[in-house]
Length: 394
Ligand SMILES: *Cc1c(COP(=O)(O)O)cnc(C)c1O
Image (cartoon, rainbow, N blue to C red; front, side, top):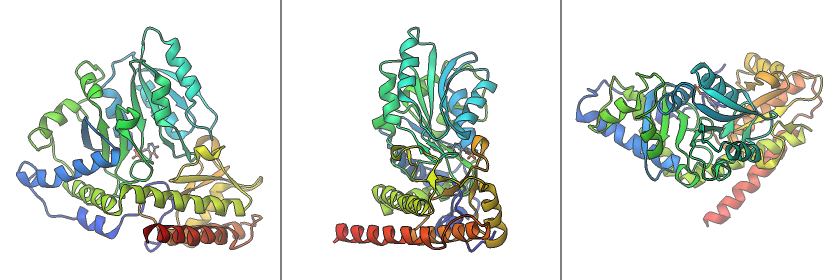
């Protein structure tokens, strides 16, 4: 890897210089009012990014995976039933975690490349007349396949069922629209190293009043992640143990950057960059793993490679020869795809360099593409996209 090159993996993402500087701070006493001055703006900024109207933000020294664990252990009891669709590596891993915690997971098997199946979810909940299902788990953006799911649609499909709705937004929050209040999400899970543009190290959760109430009766064991301890300490501006103050200061700065750009503009930038990537892929004669345009993720694209080609070869060559990182295919799609991450701190111009690198690798590997074809398609789109934006601003 070259430290000069941006990364094109779907997390960790590129860290803006000013965010790195914000993470680098002297030691402060986290039991003094100085900590609240760092913590409060971070929490307020996260509330805005999550689209929260009520409830609490909980920040844990962990990663997205720890955020999943905190969500389930704070709200559920051994033997509880949860409902989840499996359509990629990340939805699979959350299901696996629930099973390892002794939960009874009602799994809806869904082909990779598709999103959460609203009809099946509605049917499962409708059939559950005794309300044994305590939570519905949804992966907003399946990072393995580049598929987004309709979270508001899932809430609507739940009807008047009493189950909580937990959403893994690790690779969407901060880069794609997220509306916790509007969609009726009970717990949203994010990590610091994707849309928030920070190093790994924080699990960031939005928790609804209903989920907070569930923590009083939940019997799954937890100590380090116990929401009760967190909320008791937060009430006095503190933390139940030593917080990673530098990362939290970085978070306060990162949410300020997102707010300065404007969340709508951040989402539009991601949509534009992603569309340029998709046009490049089409020019290569390839297709995304996501089976239809309504499912296309604006943060990561899994590119299906031509028959006889291996996506992992491209990822390895890009790293060894050009010092550039792309994502390999995971699980069922290992070798069949390579992934282009396009989230976080990224511009059209940075993205063009990634597309150009992918083309060089394809040519080196003897794949059937014409150098410059995908780059030209993205350039055309970005030029016109920029023109449209300038017109709108004038
Ligand atoms: C990255 C990712 C995770 C895992 O997060 P970690 O921070 O690596 O623990 C979970 N879910 C999705 C959708 C992801 O993209």
